[in-house]
Amino acid sequence: MSATDRNLITAHAEVKAEITRTDTKTALLLAFVGALLAGAWTVARDVPLTVPAIVAGGAGLALLVGAAGLLLWSVRPNLSGRHGFPLWATLTADQIGDAVASDLAADIAGLSRLAVAKFTCLRRAVDLTMTGGALLILAALLTAGGAA
Image 1 (cartoon, rainbow, N blue to C red):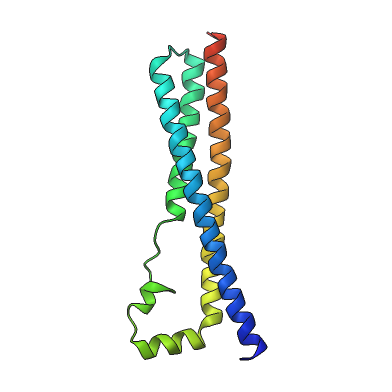
Image 2 (image 1 turned 90 degrees about the vertical axis):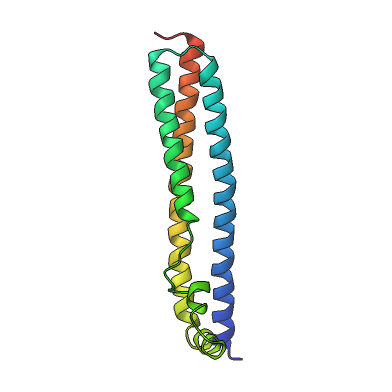
């Protein structure tokens, strides 16, 4: 095995590991956003809210729902068949061996683009979650302070 082959195999494993890490972070953030939405809804149901608190809280909840949508989009299965399992499902055993042997660099490029897209969605979802959380804190402060 040449040094280039070893480097390609290492790069391929690294990209796949990055996708796994991003999916794990996404799952954790999605659980957090879901818990935050449920908690905010529970509190908002039982507390008399002022109009400014409703506006701030509503905007915060909308941003959290947007973050959840981005998180779900980032883990949405890609069944277009460009690389990985969907492509392999259409090939014979001999064709899979040939495809993997001859097309590892292309697979690394495709998986890298997928990893960047997932990471971008995750980053935007984190930004929305932080902003939505800040608005929920503002709504709680407005409610506790009794702003009219």
